[in-house]
Image (cartoon, rainbow, N blue to C red; front, top):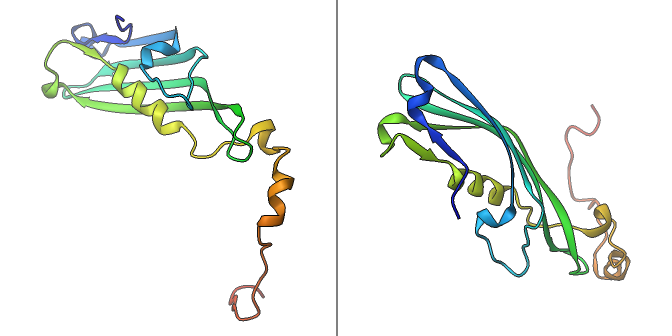
Length: 150
C-alpha cells in the first residue's frame, strides 16, 4: 500500500511550513494481532517545517484499538490519543528529499497502547467475582509516616 505520509523536504525551504490533515485506514499500520485490533480510522493532523539542520514534525493523532478486558477477557475499546508530538530528524541523515513518516506514526501509536484496559469504562461486571481473591489494603502498625501530622 502506498503511504500518504510523505514529506517533500525541498518544498520546505525559506522557513515554509506545510500543514496536513488525514483520515487514514487502520490497515496501513500493518498490525495483525488476534488480541489487538485496529479497525477505527486514524485521525492525523500536524505540520512539518525545516530549520537549517533539522526536519521538525509536529503531529496529533487519535484512533481506537479493540483489545481484551483485563478482568473478563471480553473485547473492549481503548482510545489512543497523542497531541503535540514533536519528532526531529537531522536533514543530513535523510537519504532522499522524500521522507516517509509512517514508521514514526506507527511507533507512536504502538507506544500508546495501554498495558491493561477494563470494559465498561473501568467498571467490569466481573470485578466483583475477583474481589474475594484480592487482599484489602491495610496500613500496618509497623509503618511510620513521618509527614502524616503536617
